[in-house]
Image (cartoon, rainbow, N blue to C red; front, top):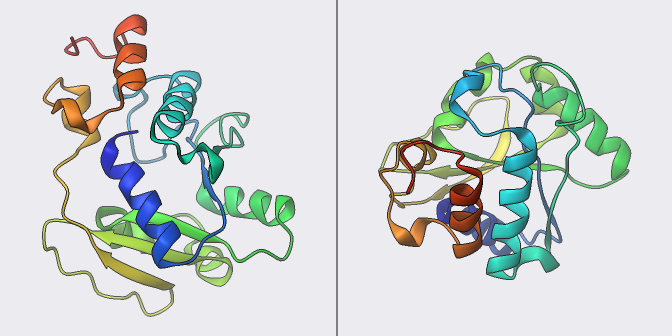
Length: 178
């Protein structure tokens, strides 16, 4: 959870008039290697620390819904569970432009199109076109933060909250991080 993610949440809340934002760390992405990320417990705790550090905990929360399920996390299953937890609520999915471009390849993309609205943040002046079937809003977003760079130890001090930095260092989550 870096400052780019936090800023996306803040902007989405303001721009789209959202009451609440729920961060849902996944157990295992079907698109990523497990070896490159901290454990679900660690990621969940870093999220909580970052939200508290920024004062966002009044309108944002962390759900461990996907961490409680075994195996890969599929978004359509999460949307089903969230619809049961928040009956009648309009559900939004906040994502970066890189995910938006691959959305058509996600499992049960048709289900997502029927049950969600997307808030998409476009980085690096990459033009994003609207998918014919997905409803959502595209928001320009030009920030340098990158989770990959942070894991590699190539980060700027302002990208992470102090409590998150302390947690990463105390738990030695990323070998190149000092």
